[in-house]
Amino acid sequence: MSKYKMLGALGSILLIIGTFISFAKVEVFGMSANASLIQGFKGVIILIIGIINLIIFMYDEIQNKITFIKKLAVLKNNKLIMIISIIALVIVLITAISANTGEGAEYTTLSLGFYATLIGSILCIVSAKKIEV
Image (cartoon, rainbow, N blue to C red; front, side, top):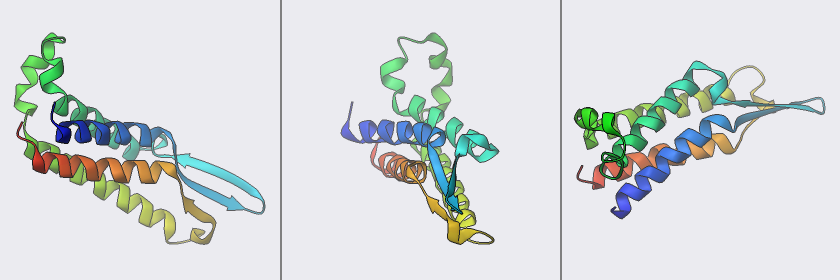
């Protein structure tokens, strides 16, 4: 496996994990609340994108172990990885911007989930640009 495919797989794993951990934290009057992406529709989309990216990056390694993966050979395309990773990046950035603007923005801080999904989507985009699938 090439180093770019490994980086892409790492980025996909970060996308998957980032949806489950805290994306934003709100602190008001000494109380705090955390929100993860998986609690909403955007998180489900990013989770699906992460799983699809992981399957595409790991295609060569898992095609012999899982039989139905061979039927998904049409997914073996680095342009598809780039497009859906850019979609994930846009979703993450829009969610972060909306969390930091508007009413109550001064009480909101971005957490580890934001950084994990941001770095994961960037790694997927860079890896897709460099690999030959």
